[in-house]
Each structure stands twice: as C-alpha cells, then as structure tokens.
Length: 150
Image 1 (cartoon, one colour):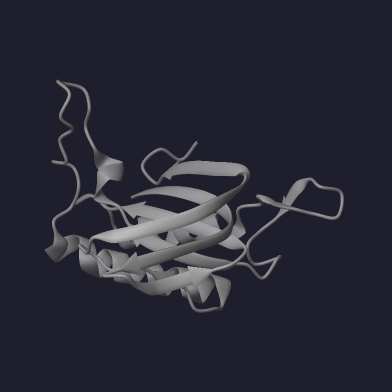
Image 2 (image 1 turned 180 degrees about the vertical axis):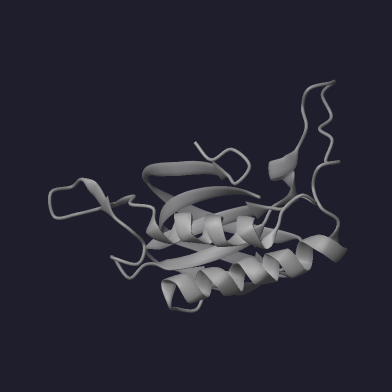
C-alpha cells in the first residue's frame, strides 16, 4: 500500500462539476493499493499517517500531527502510484489492484483512518474522473510505502 501525503491549506475533489469533498488545513492522501496488501498494511499506514508530525508547533517546527492540529483529511484512490516505468515510455499498472480487491481495501483504509483520527474523512470516488485541487502548504509532500518501512 502506497500513500502520497500532502500537507494542504485547502483541498477539494470535484466529480462531474460537483464538489464531493472539501477541506481547509489538513492532509490530502493519495492511496495506491496492490494485491499483496493486507489488513496489517491498513493498520500500519493509517497509524503512521494519523501520527505523522508534519504540522508546525508554536516554534514553527514540524512537531504536530493532523490529530494535534484538528486537521481534516481527504483520501483519494490513486492506482497510478503503482506505475511501473522500467521499460519504455508508457507506464504499466500491472501491480495496481483491480477494483474487486481495491475498493474494499480502500473502504477499510478510510474507515480505519476515521477511527484513528476520530473524525469524518473526505473521499474521492473510486474509478471516477476526479479533479483534485490543492494548495500544498510548505510545500510538504511525504511518500510512504507499507512494503518499505524505513
């Protein structure tokens, strides 16, 4: 399971010209799922994201989590996070899960993250043509892969 996390001062997801999710200060999380992902990946990644200290404290040091600052979160499914670019110029997405596996895992992840941060999480819509807008705050962008726990 891969996540690209961006600290944002605002973000939104629009589908068919209708805003599905909108947040002010918080995190925009792009989530990529592969067939090898398990419930353990969900638990680990959700805990990591909810406790990630990337918000400034009173001394302007990144020392607070999204929970500490009462920030909001949007999670957007993003199969292209598993793009393979080793050969040629056209990426392959063979490692990305198909919807029958990915949708339940995505839903479980959103539910787990809601439980961890104790608040409602905004989402995109799996498989939809989404327009994602954001203002990256910092900029702060973090890449996490549950298969590479450094």
